[in-house]
Image (cartoon, rainbow, N blue to C red; front, side):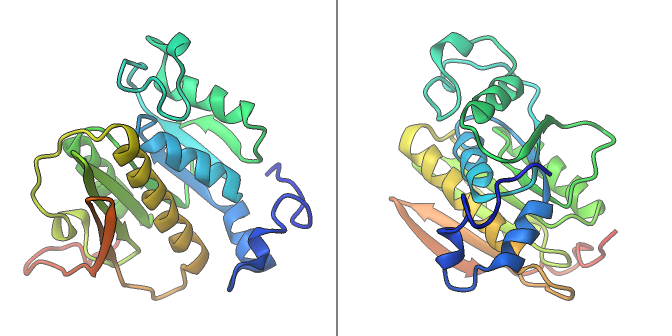
Length: 227
């Protein structure tokens, strides 16, 4: 992993309570499969890269469209290009430390961040992560807000944790706020993950304010089985 020395770029982070060289090492060792590179994923990617996550595998088969332009990583000249490649190039221009690469089937991630534009795609990606034994965070937009679900190993799955919504794709400030929350939840998951951790939580973003609640497993759901 090609990262800047802790005493340089990450010195300010290590002033945070609970953040030390061990915490930084966990981030630098992390390999995150990021599903999505659109308006919600773009700010999350920028935050994760600057925080010191070691490897980011970008996974998005769509092209940049009008809704992506101006979304942190994509400019007007990128319209019609691969969204994943556009995001990779933009992140590299930020001169940040991670190993950035398109996702491949032989990748071996240690966690997943799912910011897909479609709830159906998000659900499939979350189930794949659960079956692979990967802790994951899922961001689901809903107009001016949305929700972020944190799923450590053994926690209630996305199907248990999420709530019905209109699922109107967020844009602008709402997408940026949701992406920032998703990045923060993943960073907390990566730095605090410990053997036996089973708790999950749901962060609801409404009218610009987050509300946090614990997730609960639905009766009969088999998500207690970690593959």
